[in-house]
Length: 481
Image 1 (cartoon, rainbow, N blue to C red):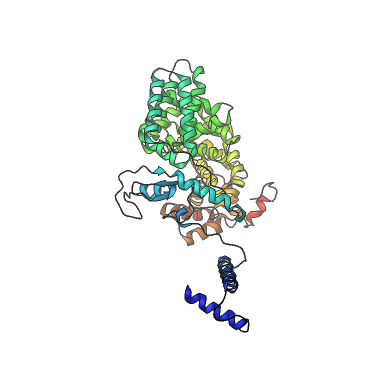
Image 2 (cartoon, rainbow, N blue to C red):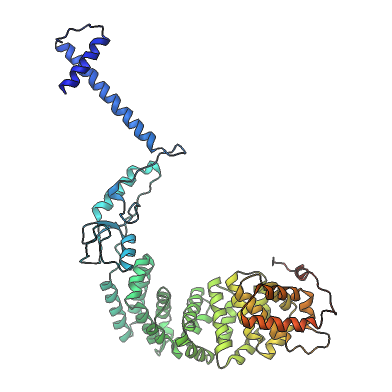
């Protein structure tokens, strides 16, 4: 410090033309130290300016640096819900839970074996992060919300025990309140949902639904059954034990009753639950046989397609109908009901302008319907059938192409009319060219064989008609194709 003072003193002496002597008095020393303080302040200010300039990005905007202690060591992002492990290291809850769920039982930073897999909320760090966010809100930083404490496995077990006790006592109001609480907790976060589902909530709710559906006073249990069903939807996919409780005549009859009612949420939840049951090969046959014996089941699904609640429920209805008319022992009876209800023109109208998944499911149902003689007859008599089928080939997906070729093959193979009928109509809308292209591009063996047979049948009538642009068939349609 003395050397610096002496050098500064010498420079001041030179600038003042040796106005001071080499042995400065008190006043001269004050001037010297004041000059040193001003010089030091200017240097600090220049350093701060340089630091700010370095923090500016290419657009000239300020880049805010997140403090190291506020960053998650895994994601390196600002922690929204800081939690501390038994190793003493703090992480963001979402990141560390993904680490643990991946099968890791050590601390990512220290590699220590964790004594407990339950992270503890770090409220001190969270409050500091929140204060830092408030201080820097001028930079567009939003204050992180105070997270809710997630549910634990012990709490879930306690709620499920209470639901089981309420079922045994047939306490519908108590069970309804517990189911609503479970649903609310599951909707709070994905972490809660996983915790509730992995602790057997699906089986407990399914058992409760089956219990109250067989109760003598069904009218009094509608509210609790609706709440249980709504909570059960959040637990999908269900395991075999949970499905086993619902695959019973009373429970399925209750679902069909909800499906036929006017309430939109009931109808949606019911059809999603039924789709979950038929999606499993283990319970599919039993479920379909029980459904086939319930009065009004086909009418309920048809109503949901005709007056859709949402695209998800419509696709679920088409999936269930497809399984019913292709796998059920009473499939022919169900097909006749659907044909008489007018499902063919409804599906064709849907196919004119729809998304890929809906298109595939609608074509699948049509493919099942034309297995029936009455279904084929009604399909051939509809003016939209052949143009729509030809248009869907090579336009939507491989599944849609395979279904379209299958339907076209079933309609053409039994053609008995001398004028060609369906075959001539298919030629007029460009089926021959489409099938030739499909054969060149390649397809599965079964479809390839049907395409070859169709080309042979169509070739016999090529001299009778002249192919036209398929789009001419859709000039008068109101919706775009």
